[in-house]
Image (tube, rainbow, N blue to C red):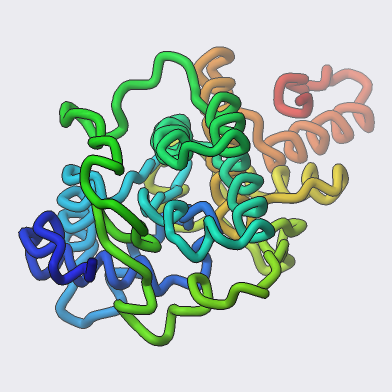
Length: 292
């Protein structure tokens, strides 16, 4: 069944349909259908599109269960992506999809992924679904009911990254068929990477945590990750990891009344050094600024 014959999809607005096609074409999407949430970048794809337009389209697609996204972790899921026939028929690709599904950070997306995996009626997928489903997470599609059982909608084949009852992405665009048609393709692990040398905080980080010194936090974050050799799921994974780091810093600021900043620690140590040069002056070092 072509996406252009799917009643749910053709009922969507033109901007929402365009946004959906754009999401399918993103190079950072993994085999579970998860990709970084990059609203500003997507808005730049058209001179006549604003960030507000992108958000409106995403909200429409989410309300009708085509996608699920989380602004806290900056992740977006194309909800039927993993049900694509091309993925299910390729054991290596499916194995990779299940692995990266477990690496998803957002509780909302993990809940949606668990639902998708459960619909596959496979023991390996059901096992992963039982591990990733979070506790006490509401329906990620708001107040809408849970999706119907796939068997009640179509008799065969689900779409790669499309809404209810649509088919392979090769029917949508020839440029994106590589994920659905090459039966001998082996999964790539390119998304598990160390922190890129050119990684930097993005505008969403700065907008969400205006009270923090984002540049100082980024320096501390970078030092910690390089020291531990941590790997994350591509740039989107690193952005989400830094988002979690900032939440912890903001919580610390709320608890102590003073955030941990690398630059503040340097200033405190400088004052301590100056005080040592003058024995009559007591150092004023706040240990909270240099711990953790």
